[in-house]
Image (cartoon, rainbow, N blue to C red; front, side, top):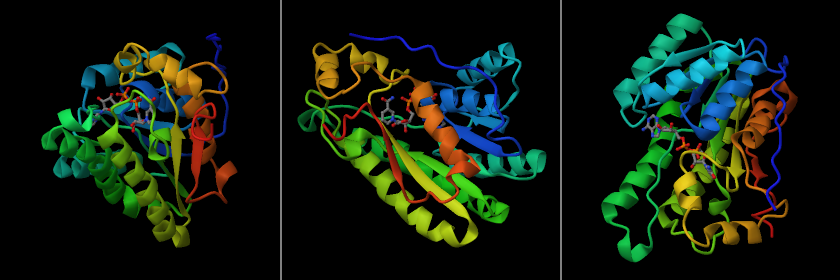
Length: 264
Ligand SMILES: NC(=O)c1ccc[n+]([C@@H]2O[C@H](COP(=O)([O-])OP(=O)(O)OC[C@H]3O[C@@H](n4cnc5c(N)ncnc54)[C@H](O)[C@@H]3O)[C@@H](O)[C@H]2O)c1
């Protein structure tokens, strides 16, 4: 019972005057946010470890008559790379108002088969990358006086999905949820807001192979009130709201964009 939605690609002005850094912009949710932010008038700086996919995002934007600035390849687990990217960004664009931390990878395996190395790799990719980019951007976001960090938790920060070997991912996303609350508290006095979006199952480069596992899609649909899988645009609309001044009284919050998966 999959319904295909046609997303509105119309341009708007909800982010005009904002400079946004979007990580993981070569694929999935980060790419969806980068394109949507550009449609809404933001100056978008897109980064990813995968330069080829970043350039594809840039080309897709160009086809719509939009401009996306590419800064890559950058490994967000390398502190020196992250810091030098920020120096370049600020020297070119002067300000930074929005940070979308969409880059991540995770190893999915049952506890018996999950090595300590896989556990550590997942926690580094899901937590350290967010920490390093938040730390490097923090002084600039603080200085801007009205800024927004958008991090990605997950329905898995709250619930376990039958058939999904997500132990390390659950820990990582629970961590992102908790660290974002703390960032909200530390940033509040400076007008720096921090919120999470907790996506349900969104079709992206990361989830396509997972969704091919026998039976998994049935388990996903059993917890899905809308009976369709999510698309990056479903998440990007929420990110536009959190990035814009429309949400200027919203911080420390988590937005479930999951077709009800967390609550059902
Ligand atoms: N897709 C979902 O169903 C879903 C559900 C819940 C949460 N999330 C979260 O949303 C975010 C985006 O997920 P997605 O599904 O779009 O993933 P994705 O794999 O499609 O895209 C992630 C991007 O991050 C980049 N990346 C990974 N490690 C990097 C590094 N060290 N440095 C720089 N770039 C790096 C990858 O190259 C890739 O382009 C992640 O935090 C993910 O955990 C996704």
